[in-house]
Length: 327
Ligand code: NAD
Image 1 (cartoon, rainbow, N blue to C red):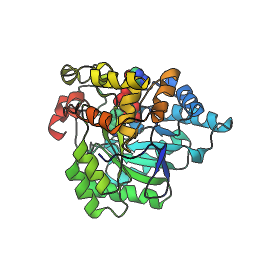
Image 2 (cartoon, rainbow, N blue to C red; image 1 turned 90 degrees about the horizontal axis):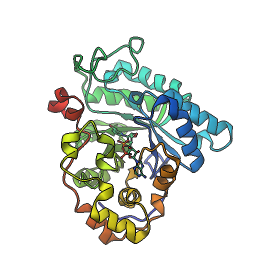
Image 3 (cartoon, helix red, strand yellow; image 1 turned 60 degrees about the horizontal axis):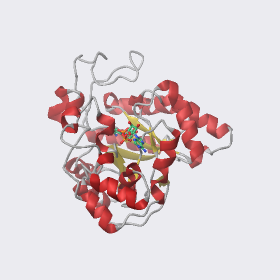
Image 4 (spheres, rainbow, N blue to C red; image 1 turned 120 degrees about the horizontal axis):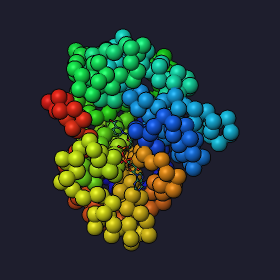
C-alpha cells in the first residue's frame, strides 16, 4: 500500500467526500440502533455503513432523523450507505430493493449503494420475507437457491439508480481482483468504492493495489480481524491470537499511548483505506474515531504489514458450508 498522510475524508471520483472512519451497523440490534446512530453522529461520525441485510435500516434512519431535527448534523453532511442484497440481483429487482432501503432510512438518496456480494440468490418477494437472508425458505438449514443473474445486468441496473438520482455513487463489495477487472471492462459508471475484509491478518495488498490503479477507493470491514467472527469462523480464529493482544500491535500502542484498536484502525486509515468499526459503547466509539489523531511511522506500518497471514474470517463457507464452493 502507498503511504499517504492523514486526513479525515477523501474525495470520490464524483467529487463527494467520503470519511476515512465510519460506523458499521452489522449485528446492531434493532432496539439499540436508533440510539447508537444518534450518539455516533453526536460524537462526530459522518459515515454510516448500513445494508438491507442488517435488518435495522428503519431504526438507523430514526437515529439520523433525530440528529438532523436537533441540528446536530445536516442530511447532506452524512455519508449514508446501503447495500443491495443477494436476492435482488436480477435487473428488474434492483430499483425496488434500493427504494425499499431508502424508504426504511427515510432519505431520498444514498451517498453510496453497494452490491453486497457477487453471489446471486433466487428472488424472495419482500412481502413474503424481508430481509430475506441466505436460505430460500428463511430457515437456517433451508435450501440455498442460486439465481442466474449475470453481474453485468445487475451493474446496468445499479447505473440506472445513479441516473434516477436515487444513489450518488455505486460500489462493490466482496469482489476478488478478477471480478473487479472484468467489471471495469464494461462499467459505464465505475465503482467508486470496494468494500472488503481487510485487517493486519488479511492485508489484501494486491487487491488494494489493483483498486488504487483503477481509482476505486477501498473500505475495510472487520478491521479488528477475528473479534466480530467469534461463533461463526472459530476454525480460522483458532489459528491466531486476538489482534489486540498481539505483541507488535500492543507494543506500538504503548509507544503512542494509544489503544491497540486505534493502532489497528490507523494502520488502515493512514494508508488511505476507510474503516467502519462497529461498537455500541460510547467510549469505544470515540476511541475508534480518534484513530486518525495517531501518526504511525512508516516502520510501524511495515511491522504491522508483516502480520499478514491470509487469514480470512468472512468466508461465506463458514457462514454456510454450502457456499464454500462459490467463495
Ligand atoms: P469490527 O472489526 O468492526 O469488530 C466489531 C467488534 O469489535 C465488536 O465486537 C465490538 O464490540 C468490538 N470493538 C469495537 N471497538 C472496539 C474497541 N475500541 N476496542 C475493543 N473492541 C472493540 O467488525 P465488523 O462489524 O465485522 O465490521 C465492521 C462493519 O463492516 C460492519 O458493522 C458492517 O457495517 C461492515 N461489514 C461489511 C461486510 C460486507 O460483506 N460488506 C461484512 C462484514 C462487515
